Every structure is written in C-alpha cells, then in structure tokens.
Image (cartoon, rainbow, N blue to C red; front, side, top):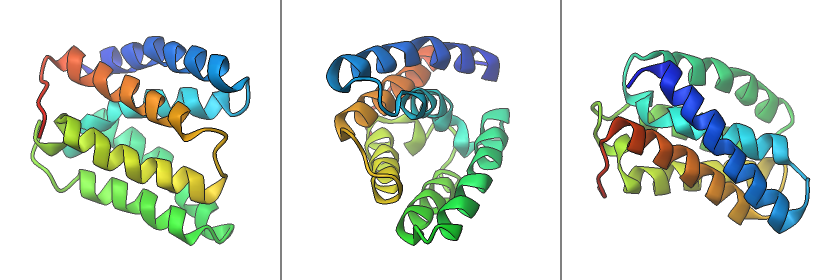
Length: 145
C-alpha cells in the first residue's frame, strides 16, 4: 500500500481514538492522541527506506532535541530506541506484527509518560492500537509475531 493511503487511513481512524479519549477523559491532550494514532498508522513501514520512515525520522528529531533540552533523558532514550530498533528489522517482519505493536507502543507510552505525564495511558494505548492495526489491515499483512 502507498504512503498516502496509510496517511489517509491513519487520519480517518485517528478520529476514533479522539472520540474514545474524549468520552473517557474529556478534551485534554487530544491533539497528541490524534497525532499518536496517525504516527502509528505509518510506523510499521519504519523498516524500509519509505516516505513514512523519512517523515517519522524527520518528525522525531525535534522531539529528541526537546526531550534532551528539557532533561527528559529517559523519554529521549525511549524515543531513540523506538526509531533505531524499528530500522533493524526486515520489511514486513517484526514491525508488521502484533508483537511489534506491543513493544514499540509500550516504549512510546513510556516516553510520553516520562516526559509530559499522561492523563490516561489507556487513551494512548487505544490510539496506538487503532493506528497500527489500520496499517496492518490496509496492507493485508497481519501476523502475531
């Protein structure tokens, strides 16, 4: 599937994440929840030289700088680990699995919690799951490990 279709799918399904979060917790941090869902709809393609990978790496650079500047070292290292680990796998390998979603999603939730604190980690877990599963379903490539 093409990058643009994953972005569109991620944007559409991120609305479910936002609706879920608004229902559970009100309107706090909805922009970050929406962005989380969209980012994770692109994330499984971090294992290729794709537009998704270049965009996510480009987006993560300001986050690294911010996290280290504000002395959120643990969050910076977690985010760095996500980006570096995701590039270590073959295409449609670990990053295209439910296990990959759990590992990378867990590291992301940890990074967010350590840097800004979360209103409700369930909101982020749902946003990650919706975005990631959207990608896997649109690719038609769905596996457990």
